[in-house]
Length: 564
Ligand code: C2O
Ligand code: CU
Ligand code: CU
Image (cartoon, rainbow, N blue to C red; front, side, top):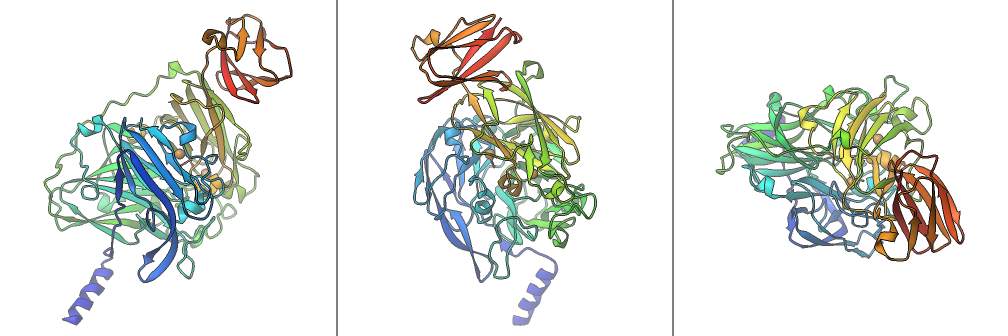
């Protein structure tokens, strides 16, 4: 008897069956949500304790299940003994609630964001965002999913029983040292593949339609997802919303920060096993995880070639198919209306160039990388965007490695990559987009709505956390209240005449710094006013809308002026 059990175990491991049940994070919902960031310990390797950080537990965080339109009142209690922040990745919230690098939570402090959930049904996530510490805090274990539900999604016949036919899958890799402790910082020996912090994970699933909500929560690695034997699957959602119809795929490239919801048709597959894999052997050169990043051996990342994951196909999660539970049995034919903004309504176009800070064979793949020539400076606002602007952003990657670009505040629609429209499964709402190496380009369209704040900026950055921490990040403010003060009657500042054809006079509390912007957020002039009236001559500017940003000791406000 003992023999046959040993033999069975040997056989099972020989056949490569996964051994550890997939961890399913608990859920939290409702208006009041209490999160505690805490140190802990977790057995990634049975019998060995690894020091971690977690949210309300030892590793990762609870999945927040939120309804569109509801209010949330969240407390984030920082007990990790280090300053950090928590950012609601992909959600449309005000800059002060966004949890970027400016909104620090000191050790022992509680942060209390409160907001209304304005997002469409999709899978979002939360993670730390302290500048130069984001990677370490995520690697230590702080990350959780946010599932937003809405009426449109509820009307569809989709699997939504959490952990049964609607399964969260957070894919990450980590480097462990000889004592099985997590190695922080940049390290390309991220040889351990984890699904929800579980190595060699399996989950029992019913033989019907199942839904996977996949997050690439890795620091750097890109996955080329696929199933055993090229079994087809159906993508139903991108980062920030459902697609117009399920898109049948056999491969799905997912870069750090990106999410995808997919359906698998497991009808009639009882007793079989399907593996979610990364077919990294098919990743193109320059995409982290491919056999090669640079074009030659000079362009290499330290330790990259010693990592067996690079360029090979590997398993992420085993789906062991069991009895059906009477759930969904068909893939829906259509999903929701997807209506991108119109290019003819664009107010401004911005260009962002990604490049290594210094050009050299090692720098072009290792960085540090800069955006428009600059490293992140927490005291510099890189872009000022008028509220309600519809904009096209054009990204160009002048380096030899692909960068997943992420922007806060908004969801966008990808217009093109390398000059051509993207495939159907990328035509939904996105907040991360992969920009290919070697002068790869991406154009997207978005709108900056609802939230303006002259002081607290939002971030845009590469979501390879090593690149982000190395300074591949910029910040923008959305400037609002674009109404001349004369209309409000409040004597704070007056600007006249408005509309104008040449000279405008600004009158109000001095001293103040006055900046003149166009609708692209380009700074045209800047004057320090010490007393009396300020005057700007607009006769040399084209007709259209301009903004005066008035910064005084008490406040900073933007005023709209029309030049005839
Ligand atoms: Cu997921 Cu600015 O981050
Ligand atoms: Cu974000
Ligand atoms: Cu990058």
